Length: 173
Image 1: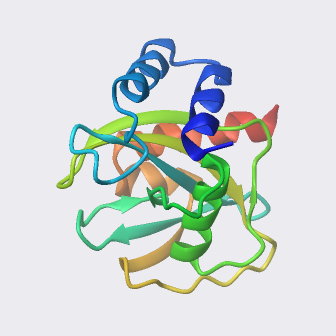
Image 2 (image 1 turned 180 degrees about the horizontal axis):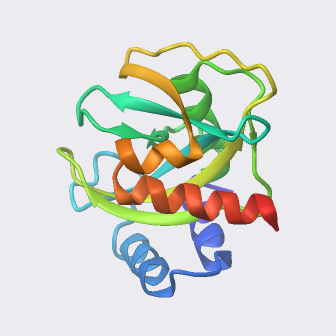
Image 3 (image 1 turned 45 degrees about the vertical axis):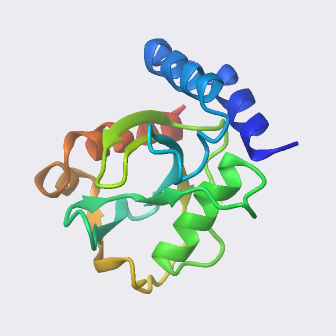
């Protein structure tokens, strides 16, 4: 199965955010290259909010280009077999943490936002960090830092806050 086909299946199976989910599906239908950065009309991206539930904290990156505290994530690559694999790869690469595992149940949220390259149609997952994990900054970040759940709203925008809320709700379920 191609990454494109996986994305369509993941989005069709995603429950919630119906209007945005439908917009993602329509985008893919109109753009066979809609998984890739080269699609100037926008493209699917995958991200992972790295969570340490035992300490009630999340790892955020100060994005080098956007200069904002965000979850780990980015463009899909040809070697990615699934959206989940892309999110896990991005989470691992940008956090430096080996052994991340995605929170079961598929994507936690969808978020569409404009970036310097195009519209990102982000499929957002949550990744659990092993206890005692040590982060290592990547060259895509200006900084990498753990924040307590209640500190996130003070440093990150609403999209990250909503992602954290959705991830915590799934953890509690």
